Image 1: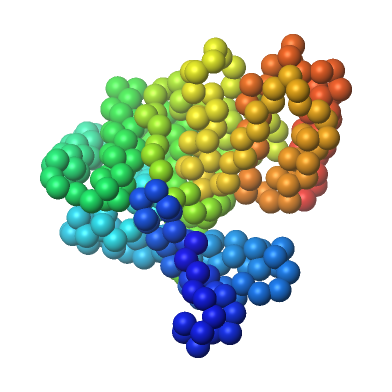
Image 2: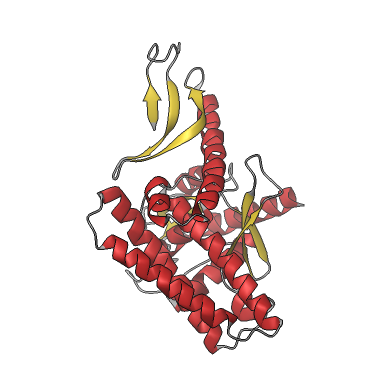
Length: 322
C-alpha cells in the first residue's frame, strides 16, 4: 500500500493513495485517497471499499484500452490481474459471437476465431522474447498461460462440434461478462458457468502467477464453483502434492476473491477453526480453504465442528440471498 505522511500534500493525517505489490512493484491507484485516522476497523473497511472501487474503474479502462491496436502499451500500463480478466471478457464475447454465427449458417466461424487466437498468442510470445522489465515479463507469462487455455477450449469445442451458445461444451466453461448498464464506472463484471452466476469480487490479487489449466482443473473448477453458487463446500481429493490447494487458490484469483488457507493438522482445536470461520463469514467474497483435512488425523470434536459450521454457514448464506 502506498501511504503519504502528514504535510506532504497539505494533508493532516496519513493517507493511502493506492495499492502496491511488493515483489514486482506493481501499483494500482485509488480513485480517491483514504484517510488513515480513527479506529483501525473503520478505515480498514474504507480501504476495502476504495480497493474495489478502484479495481472497477481500472477494469473499465483496461477494456477500453484493449480495443486499440497497441497491445504492447496495454500490457505495459494495465495491472496483470486485469489483463487476464479483460482477455477473458473479450474471449467470452468473441466465442459467443462465433457460436451465434455457426447457428446462422457460418460453419467455420469458430475455426476462424481459433486462428485469430493463435496469431494473438504468436504476437505475445514474440513480445516475451525481447528485453522486458521483470514486471512486464511476469504479467506476460500469466497472460499467455490463460490465453493458451482459451485456445485449447476452442479446439475442444471444435472437435465436439459445438454449434450454439446453449451447448453444454460452451456452458461448462468459465465465462466472464461485462454488463455496461450497471456500476459506477460503466460496467460490472460477472462470472458464469452452467447455471451459476457469481459476482466478480474485485479483490486486488497483485501480479502473481497462474496455474496451467488442464481438463482436470476445469472439472474441479466446475464442481467448486457450483458448490459455491449453492452455498456448499467442495472437497478436492487426491494424494499430497497434486495441486488441490493451488487449484482452489487459482479459482479465487479467477473470481478476484480473497482466499484464506488454513492447515488442518492433527493439533487443530475447534476454537481455532471457530475464529477462522468468524472472520471469513463476515465477507461473501472470501474463500476458506482447509488444507490437509484428513478425518483420521483430526479429533472427533474438530470433525463435528467443521460439519456443523459448514452447515450453519450454508444456511446463513442461503437466507441472506433469499
